[in-house]
Length: 289
Image (cartoon, rainbow, N blue to C red; front, side, top):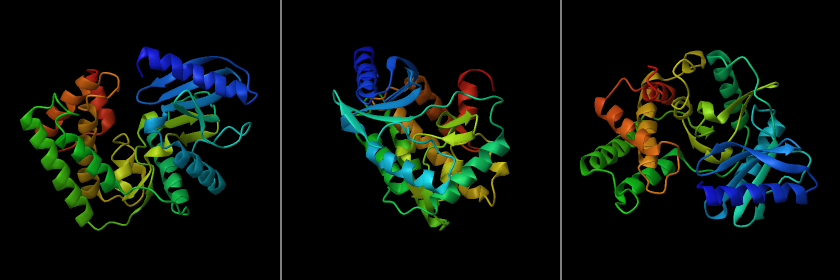
């Protein structure tokens, strides 16, 4: 969010918390992208704020309640307030339990175990959610729309369009078992807390093979996950890179250093396999790998 919208979003979150009887005198911005993550103080509530026009928070609230019942390692809603989506000043606001970061850093084995337990819990839940191919179709539509991606060169547009189409077909043709997935379980969406790893940002959930989720995690994590189809994982990694490239070329994208990431994705896709993890991409962009 840009500064004017950011200020309004913070004010809306604080006002909502106060109206619910929580003591919220200020807020610490934990993450600022298309959505905002805040720590409200001194009540220590974790607030997620999104423009009403783009939010799917009701789905996230419903799913969080189901996952809590199954004992899955996912973030829980704040028990001090009713579990619902609050609307104020054109923002959708949800309030969650805040957890202070714990050390040491999450190990690949613990990361894999937490994701396996999340998947196990998700298999017990019946809920309407998109298929991963629906998300691919959104990326394809973005690439095809020159008004939304005006700075994407024609050659790069052809590259992304072709890869999204062929990889989608390859993964579907593999015929792997499918289930409800997190959708984007990358390190930015898993917290290392005093009660263990917890996954956040559940609004990206979709149905698909578990390798689609594993394509988002650090490269060492799938080594500790059970029964991974390595060929399918490679195809899913390539697909995730192509999808992320599409998002970064969106003229309305607010991801930090988005254009630098967009160009980095294109360069990586042109080089071909072996496909790096998103974490490896970040290391390269920062000059650490």
